[in-house]
Amino acid sequence: MHDDSSSSKDTAGSHCPSIAEIAASLSTGRTASSTLIHWLEGCAICRENWRTLKRWAEEVGYPDWSVVVEERPLAHQLWGQLENVPTHRLKATIGGNHYFWAMASLLIRQSEEAQCMEPARAIALAESAAAIATILAPGRYAQRPQADLRGRAWVAVGEARRAAGAVAEAEQATLEALRCFKKGRGSALDQGRSVHLLGQLRKDQRRFSEAREAFEQAERLFLEADRKDLAGGVYLHLAALVELDGDTEGAIAYLTQAQAAIDPDRQRALYAACQQKLLFHLTRAGHYAEAEIRLPVTRRLWAELGHLENLTLVHWIQGQMLQGKGDHEAALETYRDVVVRFQRQRIDYWAAVVQLDIASTLAAAGQGERARTAARQAVDTLEKIEVSHEARTALSFLKAAAEESQLSDRGPRAVADFIRQLRLDPMAKFVPPTGEGPRGLTPGAP
Image (tube, rainbow, N blue to C red; front, side, top):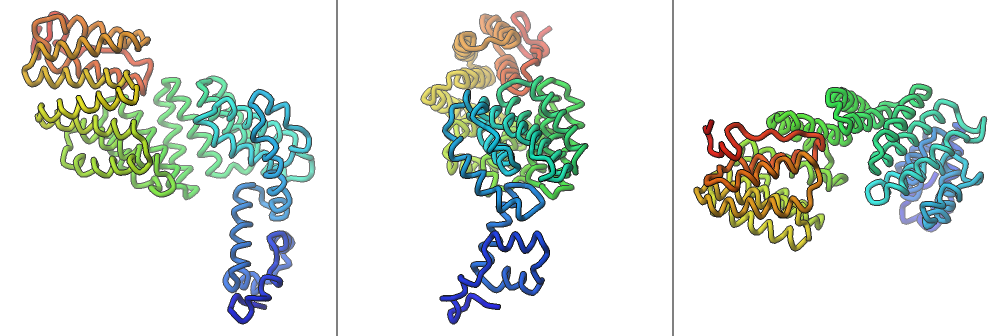
């Protein structure tokens, strides 16, 4: 036995087993426990080799150390030849020399990374992984783990297709993944990911009760797998569902759970998004004291990530907070600054929606003529951008209301809220606030 003390540092490395030797010993059971303890605790070189081997095993996802050591380097070597291949040629380029387990696992991970920016490439990568997982060499891998690999590949296909807007095709892939997991071991983590995706698809399809059932099942599975961080993402979806029902307090409860579950170091952007949503709902519910505490925290998170648009959205929420507290002048100053920021970022759509908040604030302050002017400006801009029939219905309502002699703060606010709601539910229907309309603009009007 040896250690990594100064007396043996010149020769210790030559006596250390390699990563392949550690894997072979673990696979055959030849390694004595005392020797393994020495590797892990007594020698820095062995500890580093062990950490590397565990990372490789997590990447490959196959329960055989020797397969991990043999296939993982080869998969990365072959990926170096594929990563710059154009998307339209990618599937045709993958041939028989790619048909092994670690290659399928690597393609799944690459697909997941490409989903946001390159959904078409993500689809090609995931479908290639699914094809490889289906025709792996018979007898080399255990059948049930192989079924799980196919399931993971089909989850990646479903996620990529959803990112590309192909909801029906994504549903087919997700259901295929669930069938694969039934044939395999179907770990809680794998099942949780597939059910989570199914919940997102049901939400896209406006099958909200089924979406909630799926999300609640995914939460249970993620917690069973000891993945509280993934459960945090589920809570964000549940918050969005109850928000659609107008349950602001329910959304706050789920977002509070999400904040506690999400890892702020490993999931920085998701954690910042959660803080921003919580800030928004606390403001809408009138919990201004707590919202004011969270405001600088949320602003700092997005500043550290360099997200200018989200920083502007946080500033917008601050304006809504000031408006809710009745500080009309400060709210107007903040809103106008937000408009300028959005215009500099060339986000005219949101700049126009902020104009609706300006109109609402001016109306609440008794400045009717200025309120109508702001409302008309917002409508003129949004009519050039918005194509949704329901959005145009809401804008027509406000345009007619702006022509009347009195405009309450409720009309512009209702239209602004509805336009925001359309981002969550594109099939939502506009309902004018009670007592509002071209001939009933003020609160309490018949």
